[in-house]
Image (cartoon, rainbow, N blue to C red; front, side, top):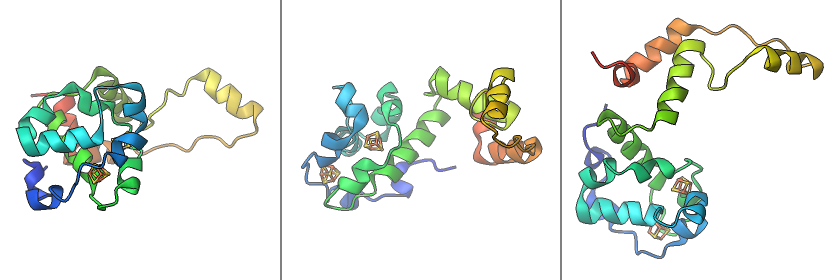
Length: 155
Ligand code: SF4
Ligand code: SF4
């Protein structure tokens, strides 16, 4: 687990951002939530430091669509920056209930969606194949290795 975004980025790299705002202009989250934007997140990292960003609940507005990175003329690796921010925010306890629910579901069922009788019936009607069994031990191992299990079930 990383302890700081500065293990992955150096400030000089992020200062290559010249604040054109193409990233925020293309961001689906920013289109519906005025107070959010990848440009603004990057700027807060540089001006206020990582603590201000990872404790802000707005970091979770990002849908990880990667459009910001595709549109950046400076080829700044914004998605990786946002992923590092997610990881640090989660370690710090800034983890929305919906994300906790999703991870818990994966831990318990191996799937990110609820598969109930209706889903199974619908799959049959559509002639879709049976869902394969999943190795929950392997999934638990991944969650342990990434530290997610500890975040969900603190000792
Ligand atoms: S990855 Fe996140 S910040 Fe970037 S465009 Fe998509 S929603 Fe916006
Ligand atoms: S698109 Fe790139 S250069 Fe422009 S504001 Fe966003 S991060 Fe900065």
